[in-house]
Length: 366
Ligand code: OSB
Ligand code: MG
Image 1 (cartoon, rainbow, N blue to C red):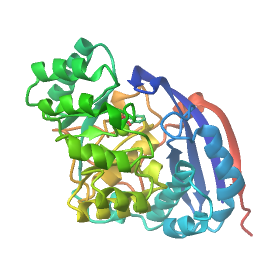
Image 2 (image 1 turned 60 degrees about the vertical axis):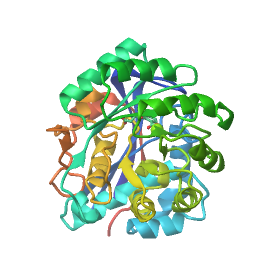
Image 3 (image 1 turned 30 degrees about the horizontal axis):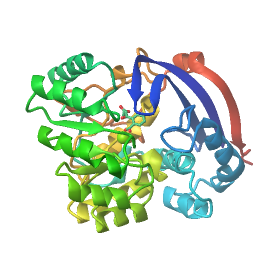
Image 4 (image 1 turned 90 degrees about the horizontal axis):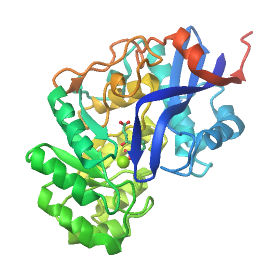
């Protein structure tokens, strides 16, 4: 058995700007496990900067190398791995990287596609797009292109002081488009009057307006505005999800398996949200084709009822590290039918974009 990692660097086709900064490259940790004739993969959703959360590529690699790898030497089922890892506080993205690797591994051992292995499936994912901040006129253009391509929902990034111009411009060009905004934590409760002004634009929801770990002020905000609140950063566990719905802090959850320690907690979170009458969709972190295939498998579950940020590979990269990128047809993407995540890795491309690599675990079978 051999477990290796690589740090890869893929330039983004266009810069991606959120309220916390601009990203021009995706620097990702990719994991590859070989055992019992199976090759499994995963991707850690961390990046270079700890802006979205406190984790970055180096904290993730540290936690994986020094604390988590020893928990996977017998290749446990994902749920068992998380039980073992529960003594380690936080570091969900690091945990998710190994948790998802184990899902791919076990699905491949049983020769089943991951999306069928996870639960009841629609057989496809409804696809939305996340558009970065730019001059409002450029954002209107990007929204128009996305609608023409058939995206089922368009989300645009906003920041404090820029939101009204952006949303006004888009709404005057596309009055009825299924539109949402993502603030990535740029406001505080005392800014509620700005957020209230967005009510007139009948947005589907506003994503993570307040602090990254807040629930209480989101529940207060929910009583002051009519636009539904969708939580992203704040939902880091099943317990947080329960509390959010108990106090009315959210009506929608953006589930990113990487943020919540993997697919097993993602399933639990989706069930909790739906049991409260909430809605769920699958977010993204500009993943390469490796991470993307997990997101699309999860997004195809019947539990997931809203279109997510799971654009096809070509939105992000000129050339991804997989030979079978996803294609969007009529606003839908079909998950890969091959075993596990069903990707075919483009090893030539992977070699070219690898910056560093190393072995995490090597067990010689006797
Ligand atoms: O908040 O959803 C977010 C990208 C990086 C970090 C945070 C977020 C995003 C996106 C892009 O919105 C989603 C995607 O297309 O992968
Ligand atoms: Mg978000």
